[in-house]
Amino acid sequence: MTDVVALLAAAWRDAAVDLGIEVVAPYSLTRPEYPRLEFPALVKRFGRPHGTVVDVFSNQIGSGQLGESLLQDGYFYSLINPDVYVPYERDAFVETLVDWGWFDSQLNPPDWYSDAVRKSRSA
Image (cartoon, rainbow, N blue to C red):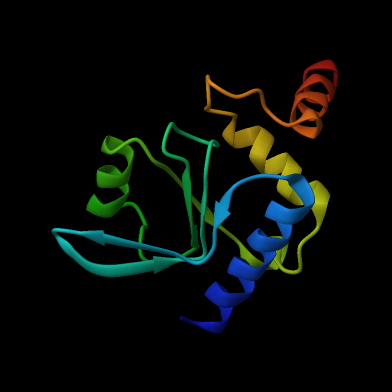
């Protein structure tokens, strides 16, 4: 794991604790067409039904077949700039999570999420 991936994974773990969301950080994924892949995080319930795979700009996902494969399997993916997300700052993460959207029809989103969505719509 690179230093950048480790720092992003730590920031997403901080977000999980602070925001009460489910995050697997770091996140490993094995695909038939790829060797074992490691990403900073999987953020569950946001972006798509299976969650959002977080990666660093210019890293593994890019715009190639891996990204398309993730989308077909029900994941969203986001290529993020570590300079924005390390260290953890609540407002940046909330803005990103609102942008990705809540994707769990069985559970209500956290209160902070609903409040942020209302604020963004009234702005």
